[in-house]
Amino acid sequence: MMVTVTHFLKLYAKIHTKLLFKSPAAINFKDEDGYKIIQLSIMNRAEKVYNLIYHIIERTKSHREMTDSSLNNLGHLAGRLAPSFVLSRTTGAALQLQQELLWFEEVEKQLVLPLQLTEMNIYKETPVMVFTREHQDLLKQGEIWMKTTAALIVTVNLASPCSKKKYPAFTIFAVCNAFSLFTGATALLLFLSILTARSSEKDFLVSLPRRLIFGLLTLFLSTTAMMVAFGAILFLVFCDQRPWMLAPICAFSFLPISVIVTVKIPLLVDLIRSTYSPIFSKKSYLESCKVNQKNTIFTK
Image 1 (spheres, one colour):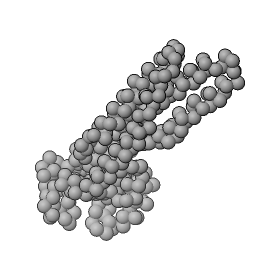
Image 2 (cartoon, rainbow, N blue to C red; image 1 turned 90 degrees about the vertical axis):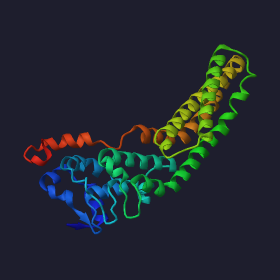
Image 3 (spheres, rainbow, N blue to C red; image 1 turned 120 degrees about the vertical axis):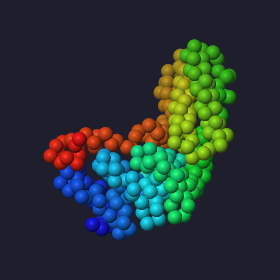
Image 4 (cartoon, rainbow, N blue to C red; image 1 turned 90 degrees about the horizontal axis):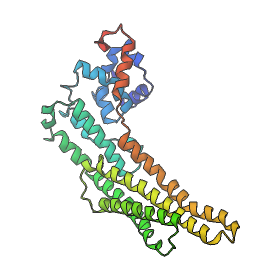
């Protein structure tokens, strides 16, 4: 059966497991270029479709000899750059490259045989060669994005440790000030390590995003402690004689915290989700297939 890519995406965006129970032949649908559903799901980074049909493909072993007209196996297809509408779902070139690496490693580990990793298509390229060629521009953009983000935060963070030492050593101020200094220095070192690192493709998978995550977390802690210390010293100095100053001191102290949280929390959430939240959850789909015990293709 021939279907277009557009029809495929619309059909399988709403597909339910019961459809495959009733029509197992749907797994062999092809588009106008001869690509099957598993190939289309990889090329279009459709993780929901991939998770749904992975256990079927793996059970039948139908992927082992699957190639297209250019002799591309599934590894070659995973090495291609995702369509622009897929990349646009992720913020920042670095996180886009991270998602691409996750897809490539998933297909390489689960669906490609060891010998297929060195197989060449008609252009004399292995899957790794295809990935490197297709993603070289994204790698450059990701490195620029990562270092620009780190440089911007370093510029803001550099000013904080230098302006705190002239306040009196009251207990609450001293504790918060010291904590702010230590966490600020840690954040600074993490961001500088990003700026000075020579980045490769693999670094964008975990290493660089993890540094940015911990750098942002320590920056939040440093900023919060700095504002608490600043508010504490103003309170201790002025509020005994001017109690009305307590409200504006609190308001102005938490203004920088609210700004940095508003600006950087979405980036931090995206980083954590992209780095630590798996997009491949095949187990739930495998278990759901055991509901229908009549269809032997899905049961042992």
